Length: 172
Image (cartoon, rainbow, N blue to C red; front, top):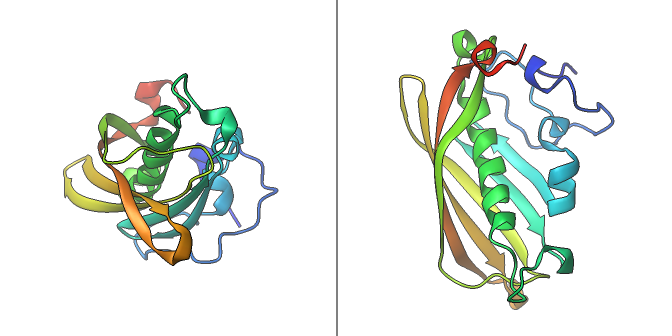
């Protein structure tokens, strides 16, 4: 299974993510290793589902991720949301955009609705809201899994991704 050029630096030791739906207009095969790297592993983030316009990740938080207030550091769910939304941006690229471009977040924000604590099990659900030329507008809900099988939204994220030439960023 081929690793896209912009992820060739990643190890191929990971298995293929079983529920990735490969869109017909996407020229490369997306693999689990495309979204697994040391930082996502440290965050406890795993991409679980990816299809055109949609991605879902799960995150297990822990005590190493707390701030001085004994709450989960805001950078943890923020990074999880950006990573999940980046997967949506990546899969949204067309054949003409994909070969020499990369999706880069140019603006993003996260609004907390409830406090997130170490040990919380989170689900990040991201969706493509709209596309305009080389821009992708993506939103995500960060959902806490509560005992008894119920869930609650604890944060909402938005991001704008620009499909940018790799060469412009110094990437080859």
